[in-house]
Image (cartoon, rainbow, N blue to C red; front, top):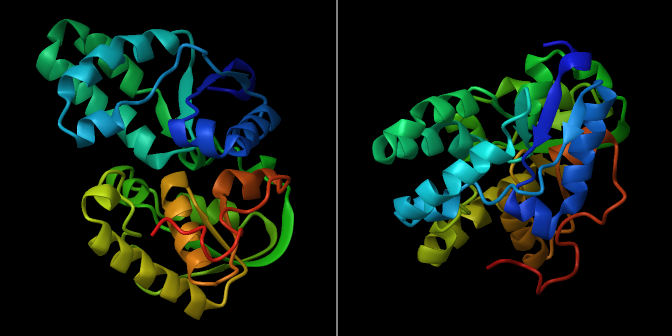
Length: 261
């Protein structure tokens, strides 16, 4: 799939759409630099992850055909959310096959085209589009969906190393959950709070200038706790850093009451 032939459908994700649109624009910037034609289907909707987490498979079955149709005419489906990518690539097809076997072929064809942003850039050899330069010590937070569902460990890190001046610092217990976990943080707030507190202690001990991740939900959780704890360490989605777009303020630098917990 050469850059000129690659028509990419951007799956924005609900959190990016509502909380951090600059991430979506950064994705478009990176993909267009690579020569891709980028389309953002207006018909796209939620990936179905909240419904799946709640056991509501019927709502997922209702969403699936709409999602398939919205991204019918693209070569690849790229999203800046590892958890959305995992849902679209694995969970959606599984639920559809179990409940609507007549849609199995459409589900398989759709799944095969789904990529998380850093996965797609690395897979296609688009590292040269990263031309940003920041003299910062960066902690990369390993989102659970990125590592466990998609197997993404080295790809995001290697892309960050392409940023001039960027020094990557590994956190203690780098692959432990931040405690967000979608509905987990709502159902088990005390456990979630303890988990994100431990994560933020590791970030503070690493003495970094910036925290990045492939998952906006994790970043909102971590940034909120950092701010609530009085730690002025900015957080940004990896797409913003790779695209060199720091036009938006960093997440949760608003003061001690901005935390999620």
